[in-house]
Length: 229
Image 1 (cartoon, helix red, strand yellow):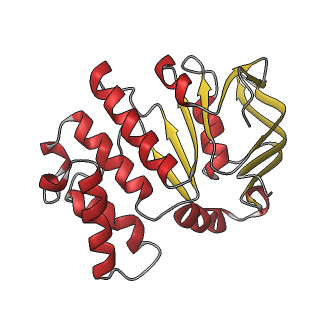
Image 2 (cartoon, rainbow, N blue to C red):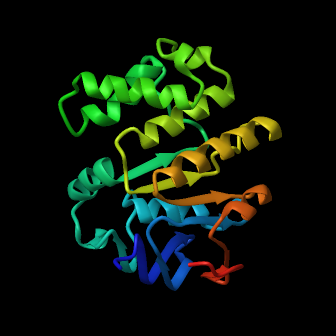
């Protein structure tokens, strides 16, 4: 079986006052398709950096990142962008919805980047919003939505193009506890039902029970808290 994500001998560092500081050094990881992986850790530990590397938005100093058999580190920036548009969905903490577009237009945008929109795509939007209890918000603009509603729209946007891999970066960080729990449950249900692979960076311990495997970043490596891979 081809891993959903394979990380081989990964190095990533940054410069501070001409001093090189490693975030990851010779990191290795294999994730099987259809698994839900949680990355735990405090702010600044490298969780977001790792998601950006896996998505191809950032490049490592050394090593390989392979997603569904495609070595992203061998692709050009343009090729990585095209790969991400087709195969990866990203849920951000800050929602990142386009304020001048309605909910429907925000969801159609990822599809417009890869194909010609037709009536079946609009039906897909309607069906997905229904699952997220947002049918009555289809013509609303983001500033008219609550934080929980905006994050549910962001989840819909990440799933609308049927990606193989979902990356979620602190998806409930801007929500209150109860709303965050509801959003997490919806995200987990939608992703697992579709058989997708999901990697979520979070500091919320309540998601641990749902995860197939939990990792924390320590001493430039990923430490596994459980082993259901």
